[in-house]
Image (cartoon, rainbow, N blue to C red; front, side, top):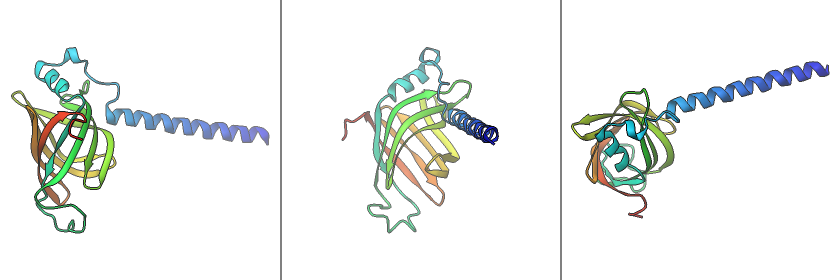
Length: 179
């Protein structure tokens, strides 16, 4: 009887370790951990973007075009809602073409979460733009869409999430300088 119990415990422990290993592998794949392109291998415009987006805060506002159903949320308006994105770093992912990882804390309305977000970046000359359609952000949901460009000390763009959408805009400043 003791051998059978030890065998069952060993099998269960093996399955748990297999599950944990799979989960870590999945998380690594989704977040791009350990697969970033070295700074010296980036093009000039990519390197400038990486350097510009280290330890910065995007501080601005967003609008909501279809506010129906959000009237009860305290502090939400159609025209000007505060938003803050605290970016620790931005990295291009190796072997992923135009995929970049933003290590970011997102703060808007009732949301306050820190996570790595992997998104495609497209370029208009020297100007990078996040371009997502029907995108899922772990912990926040799916059906996100956005076109957000970064130029000099500013960011601006459009966003949508399910039935809601609008504009977003603001400044890029050193981390913690506007608190």
